[in-house]
Image (cartoon, rainbow, N blue to C red; front, side, top):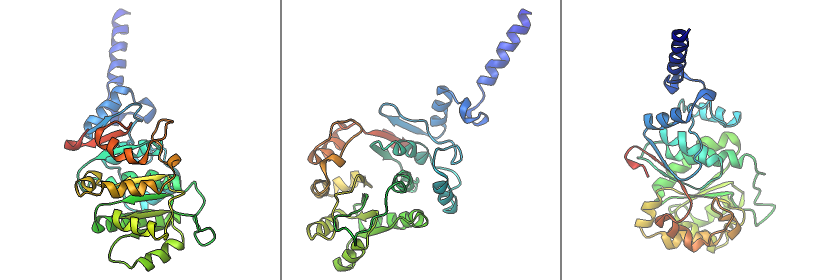
Length: 272
């Protein structure tokens, strides 16, 4: 009987020690999630980090979003998407660090689109104070165009409209498109300030800001421009994940110094 009990205990241990890939989602333990992150070279920093995504079907993403992801040809989430998306879905501030081509754009786009699909459509013609729900800032025109292409690919099937505010296109043409209404604006800092100061655009409803390649933006001297853009947003919209609002002037400084309570996600050598 003792031997039978010992064998039963050993069998249970072997069952519990199975690799995470052999387990159902609800069988995953803290140890399994730790190994999962190691397997995908995912590193995190910050409190209360949610579990990563094992597969699209195991995620909590709504069916209409999963359908678009599938149509866009994204069969499996990339490592940065596996961890960044669950944090983004909690509407928490995040810094993502990963190599070019790692899928960072979709990592911030998917939570953004989930959130926007719960909001009313923007109709700028009826109300002049209706601006976008989100702005995505990029340091260069070329990067902004790449992000626009990806955003349209995901957003168009969901009825989400995007306008790129960049150099090389007349201010009047961009102003016309903005007046037609859009949910997302993708911009370079200098051109966005131009359209804000000329009242082609207001940010009174903007509650979601993405700084793509933020470190490069700071290196290129865009920090004052980004701070000026943040000043066009209501202070109540610039909240970190605590209940205390933060002055726009301090946001980038705190981004650099680590004072702000961002969740950090890194992949490979780019870990926090």
